[in-house]
Image (cartoon, rainbow over all chains, first blue to last red; front, side):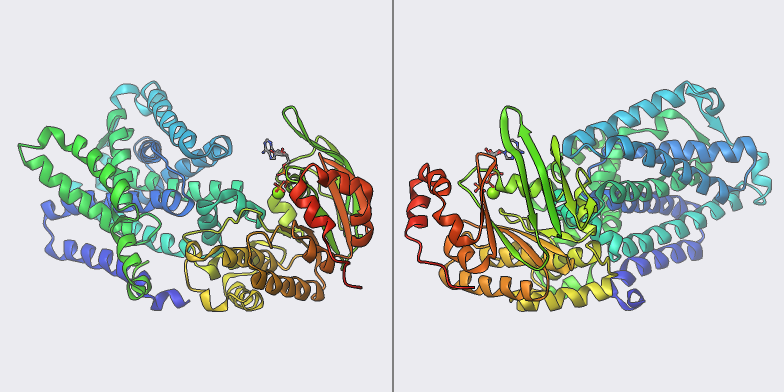
Amino acid sequence: MKAWRQPGFWLPVLFILVWGLYVLIVRQDSTREQAFTLLMFVGLASSLNILLGYTGYVSFGHIVFFGLGGYSGFYFLSAHNLPLMLSAILGGVVSAVLAGLIGLAVLRLRGAYFALATIGVNEAARAFVSNFEPFGGATGLFVNYSVYEGFGGPGPALWRTFIYLWITVLIIVVVSYAIKNSRFGLGLLAIREDEDAAMVMGVQAPRAKTVAFMFSAFFPGLIGTLYFFKNGNVEPGDAFSLHMSIEMLVMVMLGGMGTVFGPVIGAVAYQGLRGFLLTNPLFKNLHLAIAGVFLLLIVLFVPAGAIGWLRERSLKLRKVLE
Amino acid sequence: MILEVRGVSKRFGGLQALSDVSFTLTEGRILGLIGPNGAGKTTLFNVINGVYKPEVGQVIFRGEDITGKPPYEVAQRGLARTYQVVRPLQELTVRENVMVGACFGREKHHKGPAAGIADEVLALVGLAKKADQLAGSLNVAEKKRLEMARALAARPYLLLLDEVLAGLNPSEISAMIDTVRQIRDQGITIFMIEHVMQALMTLSDEVIVLDYGELIAAGTPTEVVENPKVIEAYLGDPKIAQRLLAQEPPEPQ
Ligand SMILES: Nc1ncnc2c1ncn2[C@@H]1O[C@H](COP(=O)(O)OP(=O)(O)OP(=O)(O)O)[C@@H](O)[C@H]1O
Ligand SMILES: [Mg+2]
């Protein structure tokens, strides 16, 4: 309804729209590869934000949904020859179901206990997958070359995957905006501010939190499938990397948790910084440590993140940035 | 009978916070609840609205047994409450705070109509001008009004007020008393905890008294303040006893 006329909605959507179009117009493999990684993190950070930013729950092991969903989607694709997008959606469903189950058990925990439990879940999933034969155990799964035929070869397949990812990320941002501005989202924000008070006002916190968790898990599962398909293989080390999980947190915090645009900006800015650190020989081996220090500085000095900080500056910006 | 509490007991470890408390509340009335500090008043509210489950006893709200139901289910049935220690949703605006009540309370409105109700209720409690501010930026008196607005936006049948006058200055108190009267005139039943005796005497139709978790007296405000058991209970707390004894006779209802 009114959303279409709000700059808070248009800014992130246009940003991603134009970015993807630019990549399609330039039509260079290297540009696409770089944009793929960036967009992927934009999508992951925006998904995490639904739980972290709106609901106020810190999920340290959020990468488990990328990993397990990605594994499942890859499995549907390579072992059962399902179409790519259908496999990806099914991967998302697996992640969402897992989140629903975890939610029932773990979302009763609050604060640090919840955060720790999510790390445990990630490690458990890694251990499970490493020993699960249908998923190829410790060696993982590989793309069956015949899959590419449906796309007209590996090259077009990669372009198609990029377009799928681009559309997925656009949808994530739209969903993120829609949730934030819905009644359901208001309930989540109330939970974030004071869960007990929210329940006393009628917010059905256990259910709302679980649904938020499922939303924030669904999209990483979908993205995971696309990512591993693009790579051509999936193995436990790539799928359940705890440091990627922490980087997702940094991106959300950097851009501004609880805002729609924040995770988008945060992901791009963090990847820029990371790229600089990785190519700079001085920092190459220190980039994770630097990311940690960075996180600390954000938490200490700009807890609202970049977009949050701007929003606090003036009422006008408040209306433009969501 | 809008609320019936039957033989409720609640303990925290070795502390018996409520023992065998029973009383009823008739629709449309204002029931006052007094008692020395730590008597179990807030605990009684928490048992009624589902924050705590009593070990023994039942809470009947509008003919339905709501004992042990989670607070959100109780809220959705039309029972709202304010907190003694205010709990604003700091990073949300005043209007959004109140919309939470309207969206998730008894009538479960969508956001559009909820915003309308919020503005209406904010006008009633005198916070209309602050609607777009963050709740965290309000002063204490305003936060108390916000608590009230949030509860009212749920359009409850029964409103539990936990010391809404505490910490207010005399002019704020008299404004708040007017607000409470207006709420009652809308047909909402009120159950209120209050230490400011003067206010309670003029507002309530009936008063019950808790002491060490036990209900020691019930009756009209005049009956209760003259009850020797009540005076004795407060003598343990000389300041309040003095205030109680220096009380002017309540206005005729
Ligand atoms: N969650 C809890 N855990 C343990 N003890 C509690 C808890 N809540 C309340 N108590 C204890 O129960 C007793 C009754 O507390 P309650 O808050 O109900 O008193 P009150 O009558 O509201 O007092 P006040 O006038 O100071 O607000 C107190 O001794 C308090 O310390
Ligand atoms: Mg109390």
